[in-house]
Length: 519
Image 1 (tube, rainbow, N blue to C red):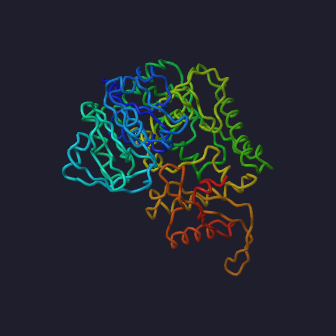
Image 2 (cartoon, rainbow, N blue to C red):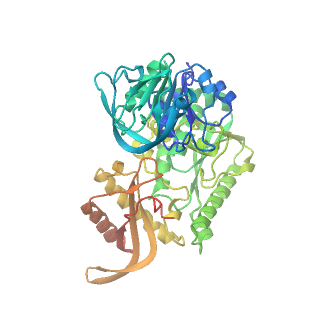
Image 3 (cartoon, one colour):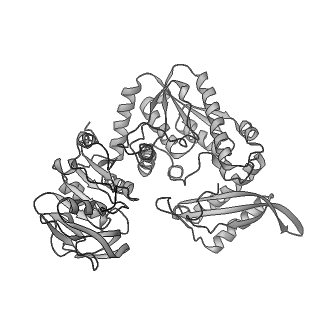
């Protein structure tokens, strides 16, 4: 079996909000890549042995004090290089060009003209000599290096793209990785597949086959323990581990009483019954409710939920014999964010990953089969492994569950009301083909009562808030403009079907200034 990472690209991150998007686009082109911070040691870059290097954008000016700089090793390796935005400015500066602040900054759509042939634009030129692209820069190249030639211009940027006259070094002022750049995929494909000559080995079936072999070789005949939450990452880990080692995998599913509507039964039906995975279900609902009694501070609730989860999991783990491995659903963004300025391979688990982190004293070796994958890749693996698409492509759900969607104190009655209301909302979103058009949607329980009238009777009950947002990166989000008739239908169903609710409201706050979750 050919190594799926033998053909690979290195992305040097200069702080752009789009860096992970560049990596995802390269992966979508079936080529493996990793992200290293701009200040990583030169030897690390050399050891990665990339077939090509992409320099990301960044928020700084190349002239600013302590601005990120270009490591000379990047150009000494004699591999193709593509600089994007800040990356272009660094290349221009390195080779003797000039970069200065632009009088007219470009943020958003721009029209780029291609004055002539360029190896980088071979898939779009000459069929197109004008491209719709996405710009996001304040500085620009005002004087091109002597060894370069201009390959694109805009009305405000005389050098919107350039290429070295004799070396495979290319640079773009615009962002080919964002969807708004219409031909961005073709431009990246030209660089990745043709200029860099990368093989398309990073495919879902190859990834699964490779991981199955690696897991089997690493684990041998040992038993592996997995904390199954019902979320996408842990479910995909369970399916992948089961394919590799079968009954050697033991999953512990902790029913916190703070899950989605009937989620505990759904997890058991999918994992235990349909896929024949060994799952131990622990009903700890009352334990969580007792510990949360009287607590209304959001951070305190998170810590309590995380602590109880750890203790329950630990108790179940100690009942098992001959367990040597602990499997976790760490994914590549977790690794990147936890690694600081190193290569993105630091072995650090974010505290929120498993509802507060699993205990360090379990004395188990860690196995993380998804740590090289982005979320969209994890989902593709899940479907390929037999998990239902509607489960794999569900909206994000917080680790502490409904505990942070119940404002104030958490009570069993509140959790039951909220789970049912949330279920109605999601059910109608799916029924009206709106679920996949929103990035995240959920209900929130408000611990205040409001007067309502049902029939001839007065009802004084609780309030449910509906929240739905649209976003690409979850760093910013706008409230989803769902049809008024649809919101009215959901409100009517919730009030008619749940006696303890007398009023439904819709959250029209965007992020910022609001957050997506309420707590």
